[in-house]
Figure 1 (tube, rainbow, N blue to C red):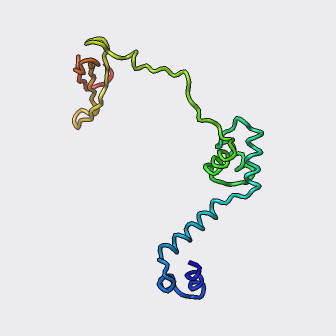
Figure 2 (spheres, helix red, strand yellow):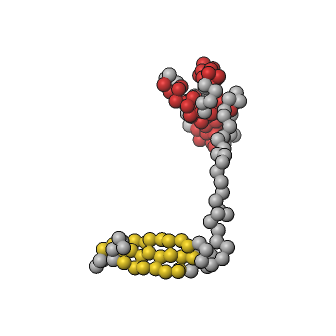
Figure 3 (cartoon, helix red, strand yellow):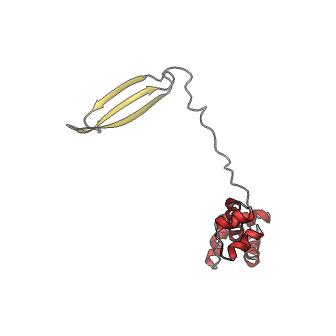
Length: 156
């Protein structure tokens, strides 16, 4: 790989340098890509210290709020980068779990016919009469229509 880079720096093309050095072109380009990705991931130590400092002051702030505070101070990083740093220093908050929500599936379950009905309005556009309405009522247990009404106006 080193010989290949030396040939390219001396003016050889990538194809010719890869043939002479025995290194595939894809390996050369992949190594360049890896170096570029590593240079993008570098975060200055002063920015990391600032994130840790903000997290110690604002213990209830998540990564989005910390990111917003950094932006106000002129430090621009991706929010996910801030999250990664916070996780690395064990400063990230736990995910919010909603408590107290009740499952209401059992409350609205029909155990037999004609216990629970469902109503629906469907608007049907027509050429001659404009917008028309179909009102229907369905039994939730049998899944059959109990009744329906088709109307030219939707205000009955």
